[in-house]
Amino acid sequence: MAEQVLLICGEEAAAYGFPDGHPFGPDRHDAFMAELDRSAKVGSVTKQRPRLASREEIQYFHTSEYVDHVIAYSQQGYGALDHGDTPAYPGVYEAAAHVVGGTLDALAAIMSGPHRKAFAPIGGLHHAARGAAAGFCVFNDAGVAIEAAFKLHGLERVAYIDIDAHHGDGVFYGFEEDPRALFADIHEDGRSLYPGTGSRDETGRGAAAGTKLNIPMPPGADDAAFFEVWQEVEAYIDAHEPQLLLLNCGADSLAGDPITHMRYSEEAHGHAAVRVAALAERHCAGRVLAWGCGGYNRRNLARAWTRAVEGLIGD
Image 1 (cartoon, helix red, strand yellow):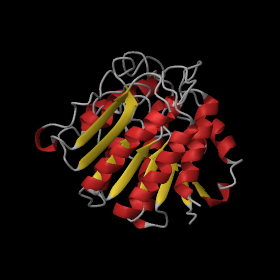
Image 2: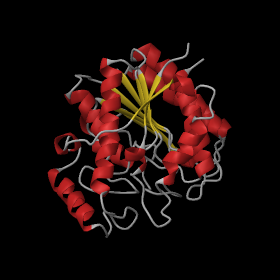
Image 3: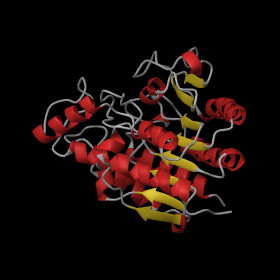
Image 4: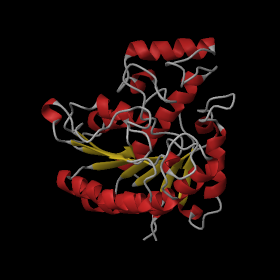
């Protein structure tokens, strides 16, 4: 049956976007919202603007020294937060903190009500490390959400699923030795795409050895290839029985993205959302938090994210 989905959106969310023709521009938010507003299921969406996360909340995942670094560059208003992919601009700290705040509010709504499912189009910033920006990502709100699920909500097993074309390295290495953080990532092979990580043999370390699943895909992989490996993701989730499901719906895996080499259609994202919702019913009392994350062809991201939201809503 149809379900009301919480949507984290608004001008504060759109403010997280880099200027001067950067692929991750602030127009991505509005491109998605225009498409979603045409959906027959938009009536099953509850819109909520994100709040500013506190420094303490950001530091659930990030180091204090790194937060100082972002604040300084945000006040300076120029320069690069990493090696050049992630430029500073005036107010970038506040924009990134709103992404974190929106994700944390979505998590709270899922864990305590009134919603069981939420989607944040500008979020799931999966490349940022605990102490560094990377790949257009300033604060890793997905990492913050996983830590908050353990710290604030008392969960013992959280599963993060990522279908963005890029490997979610910030999340993977941030929790590589934590067996509580389950991780399943379908991504373009790192030998052909940034960040160059996520091989099959990266399955966790120490106490978490064997608890992570990386599935690199060849350039040009299509929907049929995705549907085939998706079955492996479902088997992995069923085997580990998580208490919360997180889904990164990066749309840069669709054909025609300007910076990747995959060839999915939006059907892959619709399928993933429908199946994650079903997995959540089996294991997590229906709880799913999903993000838009990557995607640099505006038409692609608008269609893929809309299909993802529709999949979470159901019939």
